[in-house]
Image (cartoon, rainbow, N blue to C red):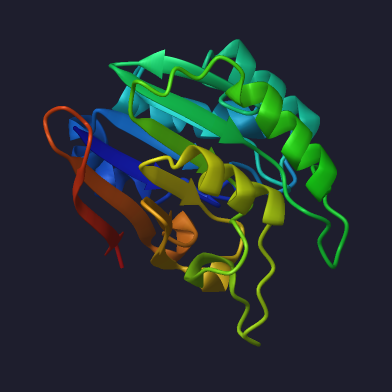
Length: 223
């Protein structure tokens, strides 16, 4: 199984053509938020339509903090919204959470640690723990390479880290912190923030045949 992970498109779809082959060959394409740059329904449709050209029904996403409410509604209408829910596809359990903690400049889709914890608890209700689990979160967990500002300050979420420590997903795809592209681990969970697609980064993950182990995990560069 091959997964391609994208994040922080901010409405820029110009680089998708350059990874069209990788997107078409992937078993699943995940988008970890900020599909638009403060966009609403038309902006979301434009991005989703561009992704659908290469992914068809192999696409799941969560909204980011720069996505207005309508973006989440668009994802739901397209039946690809993983925000605050989980589902089983291809023998894998997929779970997601959108939005972010409060930012220095107010953005449309912000929340707090308590709400993150509540929404993740609701989303996780009914997880079988028999299938491999993959987690998509716009906001990164705290205290990893994936949530570190240039100043060295960690700005991730304690609630998201707690969820990872409790449920041990195989993989957490995240984004939001543009300068924190990197790969890290929390226990048995691989954490990857490939950085914004418009900066040329995307995540590549290849699993063994039963989906129980990650064989390859890279941040690949287009530019």
